[in-house]
Image (cartoon, rainbow, N blue to C red; front, side):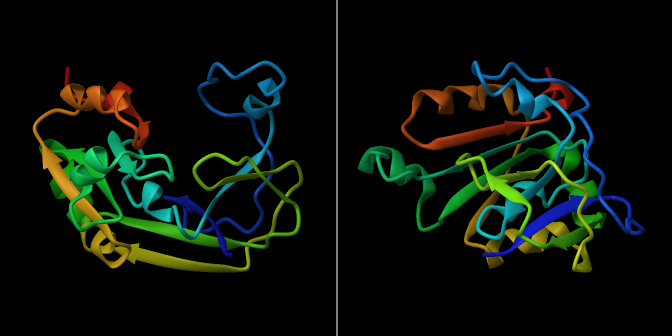
Amino acid sequence: MRLFHFSNDPAITIFEPRPVRIASERPPGREWLNGPLVWAIDDVNDFMYLFPRDCPRILIWAKPETSEEDRQLLGRWRGAAYIERGWLARLEAGCIHRYEMPTESFEDLQDAGMWVSRKAVVPLALTAISRLDCEFALRGIELRVVDSLMPLKALRDTTLHVSAIRLRNAQP
């Protein structure tokens, strides 16, 4: 397993734990997840962060308990990434920096490949990734471009895993 952190900044030499920018409501006992941490994503789920920083997106994939009917929403793909048409040019022209992280100090959150470290982390390697739109198929993820993400909130009523990221930036 490999862990990554994605950033617009190509010059990070050490990741210091910091609180999240916008606190989320957390289950009792997990409030600490809003506190100072270094976040990483595993290599299986890294597609969740192959976007310009503020790009709103909805990501779906099957879980073991996903129904056959809901699996049909994925077609032949492992998952799907939805973005709004207004973000497509930025995705095509964008570049993001993927830092590979050492795994030793990270804790598995058992949530969509997310890991956290309470300690400072020195990255192992840095890769610049451009033409972000071309990265999804390589990972078995279908990029789906829609006019608005808002109608897709109904996906939460399926048995698929649904991650909605930066929806505050989506079209109303």
